[in-house]
Length: 123
Image (tube, rainbow, N blue to C red; front, side, top):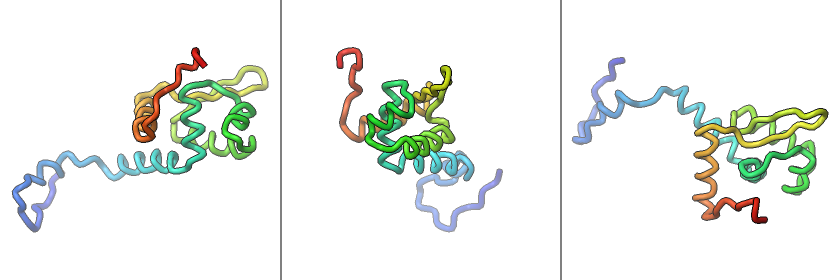
């Protein structure tokens, strides 16, 4: 793809950067992921699911929200491919997806909040 010359040359070699600029669609995907985490409740649920696999009822108790509200947030997180689910009988269990994207977001949350992962075996 050919890019036009910039109107002003500030000596920064911007044309080389522009040649590597990701597509608008790539930024839309990233924007969607960030919008998923733009809700405090979803962040809390995601953080919990990075450490535990849980059902809706237990998640509701952990985050002090109604089951329908938690289910709504779980649908959003699942649509963003940040969590996965599995069914066991009538129960559905959720956990963070085992993906680089999910691990990176988990790490970012903990870094920005200046907290460390609890060792749930010691709790």
